[in-house]
Length: 418
Image (cartoon, rainbow, N blue to C red; front, side, top):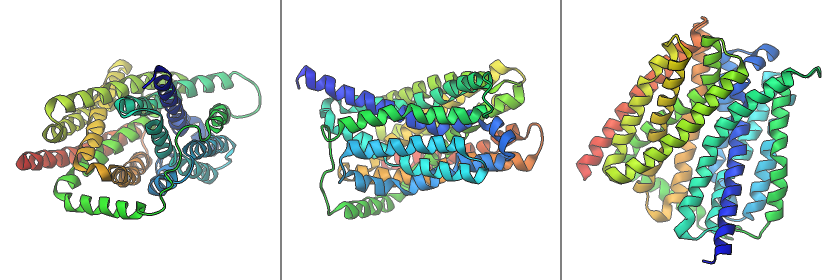
C-alpha cells in the first residue's frame, strides 16, 4: 500500500471519528442541561429519564438492522451525510421544543438518524483502509464516542455559561442545543463532497435476511454461553449509560456545583476514564485469553463499577465522589469492551456483522433505553433531596449485582467448555 493510500485511509478514519464524536455529543448534550430544562419546561426526573433513554434509544435500536441493510445498497458517504444532517436538525429541534412532548419527538428523530451512523461509518473505514490497518481505523472511530461524551459535558457546560452571560431573551439551554446542532452542518458538506469516492453499497439485493436469520439461529443454539454473556453486557451498558446521563446532575444536587463546573469535572472524568478503561479492557482480554478470560474480566469490571457507587453517592466531599466516578467508569468500560470482544469471539466470521446488529439492538433497547429512565423514575418516586443519589445507588447497585451473577455464570460455563 502506497503512503498516499495509507494517509487517505487514516484521513477517512479520522473523519469518521469526528462524525462519531459530534453525534454522541449531540446525544449527551441533554445530560448537562437537565436542571435548566426542568426549571423551564416544568418537567420531573421521570420525564428527563424518558428523554435520555426510551425517547432516543427505542427507534435507534429498532432501526439498527434496517440501517445495515440500507448500508449494503446505498452509497455510504451519502447515507452518512443524511444521518448527520438528521442528527443536527434534531438537535436544533431540541432547542426549539416548547414542551416535554416536543422534546421527546426531537429525541426520537435523533435516535432514528443516528442509527445509520455506525453501519455507514464502519463501512467507509473498511473500504478506505487495508485489513492490516482496519483495526486501528475502527479504534479511532470507537474512540470518538468517549470523546463525544466528554465534549458534550465540557463544551455544553461552557456554552451554557457563555449564553447565560448574554442578554438575548432566549433561554441559554436552547442556544446550547442550537449551537451543538449547527456545529455538525459543515461536516455534512464534507461528507457530501466525499460522495462515492470512498466505499459504496455492495449492491447485494439477496441474502441479507438469510444471514440475519442464520446469525439469530446461531445465537439461539449457543444460548447457554451467550445468554449470560448478553445479560452481563446489558447490565454494564445500563450502568454506564445511567452514570453518563445523571452524574452531572448528581454532583449539582449533592455538592452545589453549577452546571458548567459539573460539566467540566464530569466531562474530563468520563472522557479519560472511558478511553483508559476500553483500552485496558482490550489489553487484558488479549493477555488473559479471549474465551475464558473475557467473562472473568466482565465480572471484575462490573464488581469495581458497583463498589464505586457507594462513595459516588455518599461521599461528603467532591474529590472522593469524582474519584469514585472515575473508578466506576473504568470498571464498566472494561466490562463493556469485553462484552463486545466476547460476543465477536462467539460468532462465526461470516455472521459477525448481522450478529453484532442483533446484539446492539438488544443492548440499545434494554440497556440504553431502560437505564436512565429507571433512575429518573426512582428519583421522582423517592421525592427527597437525596432522591437522585438513592436512585443511582439503588438501581445501579441492583443492576450490578445481576450483572456480576450473569458474568459468573458465563465464566463457569466457558471454563466447563474449555
